[in-house]
Each structure stands twice: as C-alpha cells, then as structure tokens.
Image (cartoon, rainbow, N blue to C red; front, side):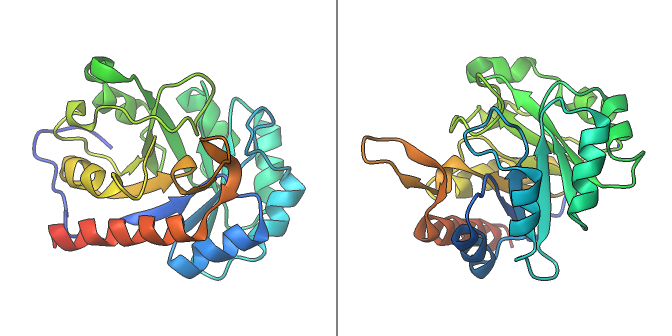
Length: 241
C-alpha cells in the first residue's frame, strides 16, 4: 500500500463491524445475531477484558461461517501468537502494542495469518502530528490499519481522537476505533470513510453494560447497545450510498 493524493474510495461500500473484548457466550451470540462481521478476543493478560487462549477458542467455536474471530495481542512473542492462532482456525490477528513491521510479519507466520496493525493516534490537536500515511506504508503487509486513541494502557479506554485531523487521503484499508458508541459512530464513518480505500469500525467499551456506579462493566456487553451501534453504522452507509 502506498500513499497518493488521488486515492480511489468507494464511500458507498458497506462498513464492516467488529465487536471487541467479548468474554461471554451470550455476548458472542448477541453480536452475531445483530450482524457483526468480526468478534474480537483480547489475549493480553493485563487487560480487564482478557480471556485465555482456551476460552477464546471455546467462544470462537460458536461463530457461524463468515464471522471472523480476531485475536488481539500486545507485544507478545511470535511463538505465542502462532500457537494461539493455530488453536483458533480462521482467525485474524491484531497487533496493538509496540510491534515493528518485522515483528508483525514474523508473528503472522510470515503472512500465513492476516493481521491488523493498530495505530495509536494522540488525543486533541496531537492527532495532526501523527504521520498515518507513513505508518500505513511501514505496515504495508497488514490487511488494514486500525486507528485507536492513544491512552494509558492498550485500547478499550473509551476515548476518541480528532477524526478531522486525519490525512485527507490514505491508500489503505482503515478500521476506526477508540471511543465509538451508538451515538457517534455515524459521524465517525461520515468523516473518515472518504479518506481511505475502505472503512471498518471496531467497538468495545461503547457497547458494554452500564456499571452501577458509572462507567461500564468491562468485558460484559449490552445486546441493545450492540443493536443500536450496528443500526447507526447502517444509517451512515445509507447516507453515503
């Protein structure tokens, strides 16, 4: 993938949807029923949404054909990534740490498994300083670049970055993430979709169940929020048709 100023976009293309950080059977079933294209399992022990490889494999077996399990790793050794992906056939990998392009390539089995590479976009005006075009070129072997907000830890922080500060033209497939909710995903798609080859969206905290004291129950999804999120994505697609 390389950058140029005349990226041919297809704004009418269907926006694909990944629901990430699932830990329960009923949430996997709810996401599939609502129409999700991919289900994300966090294989990073420090995350409050983490599951073991065994648990991820168990949950992934519930997925019907054409719904993709995505395995999220943070700075994991290549042999660990390869072993996990072997346990879950048909999985896509997501590298969300400080992995170099070479490390991603090796951990994917030298391209045997498709993978996403997360780009951690600074919050506020700092987003303008992130060279996404170069980042996408550096990680040209990735199936897509996933855009997440740069927060403490790795992902699931519920923060959005300034979408308007992204480059106007990136010759890559992008996945918009970071603080998406049923209320803002339509706007996010309308802003970012014209800037890339195709756009997908990735949500975690934005479809989690509300915690009694505020915030969300990490790793516990709300079926109604999932349905509303997917409906909002489809509304954005209709607006760009």
